[in-house]
Image 1: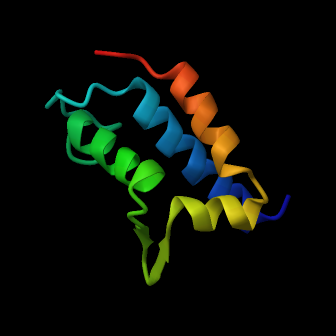
Image 2: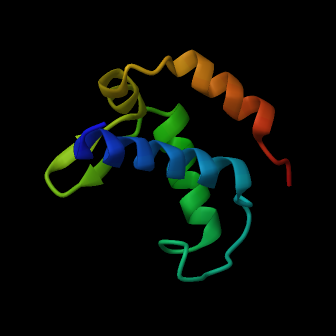
Image 3: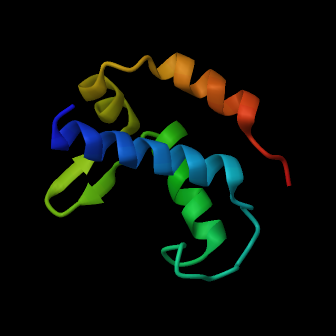
Length: 88
């Protein structure tokens, strides 16, 4: 796997992890969260389900872009997310 693919996969994994594990109503702040836990949850939800792109300098990538570049089926990923999500 080339470095660009590894970066895209890391971005996708982090977004999924944040969506599955973070409490959307939390305002907990730590070094792991960009602003707070709830904000990171919302950012990951927007990326994964609302077609909101993530900005990386001058590059804007949507969930569909990342999955297309990595040849990953978006429907399968969303099904796995639905099975793994933690309800708060």
